[in-house]
Length: 326
Ligand code: CP
Image (cartoon, rainbow, N blue to C red; front, side, top):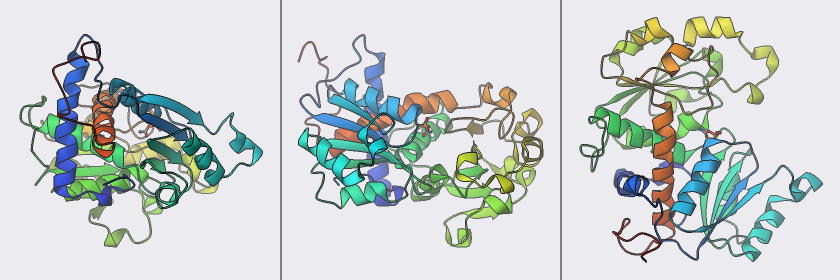
């Protein structure tokens, strides 16, 4: 495969290969020199038309740990503000020799447009497009979940899928590319997914998605191995339809008493950014059951694996030599 546009592009075996490769590459973080020579001479462009903290920084860290050259492009401060199109921006980057373009865009479908155009010769990786998909987020969520549910470390995680695990996704499903990618990837990996949301924050056609729907969070929590809390995306919403923080937190938020309804082994996940006090209380966000910070560090390993596999890194993912020795 040359591009990663959607979680639906991945078979179970593809996903397990990426997760296992990420486990190998995670070992690099334990070394004194956190770098491999694998993608030396290759160029990765981070093309961000929308704000990001975690995704942009972790793709940059991932590419640098594999010794690739990295060009960071942010639409803010670029010629996009003068009206330059996606096509002309892409042609400019191609002229600079991009081997991979990591794109985040406010329009659903922009990464697909780039991947199917003749504008770019290299691999295209979707880093979040509109309300459509965020496949590397789903992969890093699966990476974190697989580790936590198999005892916390890489040992039991390798080769495993998530068969029979029950994952509940709570909140603004309507605007969430994270929810879409997770529903597809988690079911591909064998998990059962339930979404819980106010009816106004569910997409039309949810009945045809591979997930169950519930409006009763308290009833679903005791049957969950993981509960993924989502931010309400005010920026994609008409203010007239926006619920008050208090009203939303009372009905759909995760607080300490609610978390106590979850089984002892179950974890709380959040892709970030969080709205503390709305979908999640500080008590829950800062508890050892919340994996938000682990998700971020797993994200670097997963994005290293995606770059390594798409750019055809030569040899085993992890060699015993450091950059200096190579
Ligand atoms: N989870 C996520 O995509 O975060 P950022 O918007 O900060 O990249």
